[in-house]
Length: 317
Image (cartoon, rainbow, N blue to C red; front, side, top):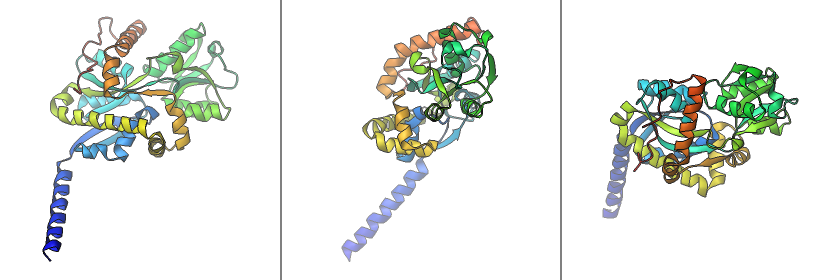
């Protein structure tokens, strides 16, 4: 009887402790878009890593990387999974408002300029109607493609669309080419409906995904943000150690077969926190400077804009 009472008491203590722990989880509003490179985010949610870190992550999906940055600055989001170039554009217009605290991945073929049946090379883009997200990383990739074909934006007609809408438009034949991402690349090229005219593998370090926070978010939720990064790091390690299970989790989140996810992962390079810090102190910093120059030349940002303070390689330490 004593053993039974002890067992019951132990169960009650465990239940109460668990309830207390659940009550202690702190809300964290996180924006993201449906992108295979964010596989660690999907895994951390599925495996409970965020909850284990004391967080109640409240996800909100956006159709393009830059869309969540305004809500981030206004305080409607605590964290946004975005792209470095989008953070550069937004912070250049609001200096000191944003900080990139970690790199998640860099695209190495998972973004592409796709052309219809008659568009096979960058030079074939001349005179074509192209769907692209203007002012964001997709336009940067298109610029690289046009340069490879000896062309400029004056040689084509641009239609402003987010990457998913661009893929849909190309599939429907409403545009001649589209700047899009996975899973559209695999789906359209695999079905013989499109050609990969130019990919991010040909433009290294141009499209890099990152974790962005706001200045006010850093002051109010620095501990929670650090816990988020630790959970993401744990998830990244899981992806590398268990690629099949991770692909199944991401496939469910993205509504894509796991086998397709595995193929897509071969087109991105995932960063853990150590690699992220090293990149932000090296190649990613150089790329950020180059992107800033590109945007200045386009007139997207002021000539005196700077990326100083935007990259925070030591935030997680």
